Amino acid sequence: MSDREWCSVKRRVGQKTAGEAISRAVLAVCTLVMVTFHSINPSYASSSSLAERVIEHRLANGLTVLMVERHQTPIVSINITFAVGGINEQVGQTGIAHLYEHMAFKGTRMIGTTNYEEEKPILDELARVGTELDQRQRDGDANGAKATDEEGTTIESLRKRFADLQAQAAEYVVGNEMALLYQRHGGVGLNASTGKDLTRYMISFPSNRLPLWAAIESDRMAHPVLREFYKERGVVMEERRLRNDDSPNGLLFETFTSAAFRAHSYGIPTIGWGSDILSLTPADTEAFFKTHYGPNRATIALVGDINPRDVITLIEQTFGKIPAAPPPPSLVTVEPEQRGERRVEVEFDAEPAIVIGYHKPTLGDPDDDVFDVIDAVLSEGLTSRLHQKLVREKRIAASVGSDASHPGARAPNLFIVTATPLAPHTTAEVEAAIYEELERLKREPVSSKELEKVLNNLDADLVRGLRSNSGLASQLALYQAVAGDWQYILTSRDKIAKVTAADVQRVATQYFTKSNRTVAVLMKKGNAKAAAARPVSGVRP
Image 1 (tube, helix red, strand yellow):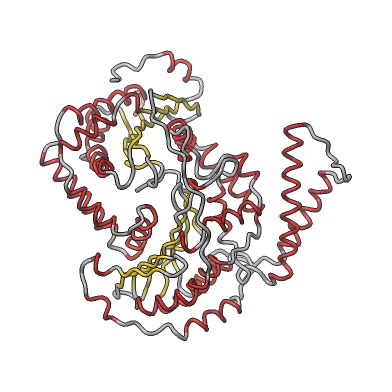
Image 2 (cartoon, one colour):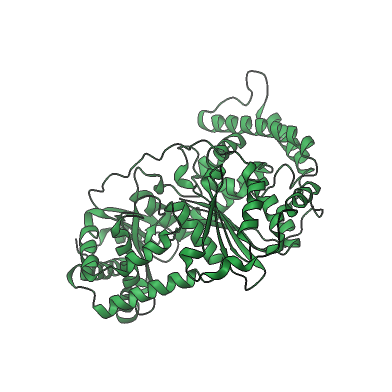
C-alpha cells in the first residue's frame, strides 16, 4: 500500500539540544521494569512458517502486540501503528492528526522538561492567550473587528502577553530529549509518519534496552505534553507551503485528489488546509488525542532478538496500565458514485505532468487484488507496458507510473496513473497513449507468460519486504491496523496468486471508464489558455 500524501518527518537523533541529562523519572521506571525483563530464550524460534512464528497478544485495554523472534543480531525493530489519520478528522480541523504526530516528539510530563509542575500553569495560560489571540486575529481579518475588546484588551497587548509566555515556557524545555535518550542507548531509525489511514512511530533498538523503550513509549502514549505548540504549528505551516503550495507535484496531487473525492475525507490533504492549521488549538489537539490515540487503537509489532514471554510481561507492566479510550466516532461518509469525467488544471511555473484516476474498491474486495496485478502489468519495472510503450518506444514520456491504492486503504480509493511528458510532447499525447494501454487490457487477455512473471514479481516483492526486521514489523502493524488482521499479508498473497487474465479484463472493463475518471493536468503559466483550446486528439472515451 502507498499513500502519496503521507508526511514522513524524520527526527534526527544527533542534533545538539539544550538537554543533556537523562530524566531521573525515566530511569526509575526503567529500573522497575528491568527486574522482570529476563534473558533471551531461543525456544520460540523453532518454526519457519510466518503464520506460526508470529505471536499475538492482546492486553485488557485493547492494545495488540505482535512478536517475531529473530536472533541473528541483538537488535529489535519496533513499529507502533495507530489506526488514526486524516480520515478521522472533522471539518475545520484538517491536519490535526499530522500536527499531533509532530507534538508527540515534544515529550511528556517526565521527558522534555526541567520541571513539569512549574511548566504546566505557564502552558495552560499560553494556550488560553494563544487561542484568544487566534480568534481575535481571525475576527479582525474577517470582519474588520475592533483592535480592543469589551474589557479593553488590545490585540497588541495579547501579542505581548503571548510572546512573554512563550519565552517563559521555553525556559523549561529540554529540546529533543526523547531522541537523545534513544541515541545514547543505541537507537537508530527513529521516525514517524502520518497518512490518511494511519499514524506510525518506529525505531530499531538494542534488545537489552527494551525496558527503556517501554518506559518512554508508554509514557508518551499515556501522558503527552503539547509543549512548543505554536512553534510547531508554524513548522507545519511551513511544511505545507513547501510540500503543497510551492511544490508543483504536491499542488497537482492535492488538486487532483480533492476533485476525485467530493464527499469523503480522502479528498482532504493529510497535512490539512492552511486556514484550518492556523485555527488548531492545544485544546483541540488534546481532545483529538484523547479520542483517537488510546491503546485500543494501537498495534505494536516487535521483530528481532526478543523473548516473547518477557516482552509480554514488560508491555503488560507499562502499557497495560493505560486505560482504553472510548470508541471513536464512526466513519459514516461514503463517496457517491461518480457520474461523469472530472477534469482540473493546475497552473505552475514548472514542467507539465498529468494524473489520471479511477475509483475502485479497497481491501477485502476481490477486485482489489486484481488491481495490484494491473498495477504491476502497467508499471512494475523497465519491462512494464507503460514504460515500454511511452518511454522506450514512442519516447513521449520522461516517466510514467501507477498506484493501486491512492490515497489510502481503509476506504474505497483510486487507481491512478501518473506521467510527465518528454518535451516537446504534450500531456494530451501522453494521456491518449495511456488510454490506449488501458483499452488494450480490456481488449486482449494478458498472456500466460506475462501474467506468470507479474505474479512471481509481486510475490518476490512481498517476501523482500518481510526480510528485514523493520520491514516485517512495519507490514505486521500495517495490516493489523488497516485490515483488522495481520494475516491479511498471507491471505492476500494467496488471492493474488489466483488472479487470472479474465479477471484483469473484467476489472479493466468495469472500472476504466470515462464516467469513473478524474484527470488533473499541470501546465505552465501562460500556456493554460492555449492548451485548453486544443482538443485532446486520440483520447478514447
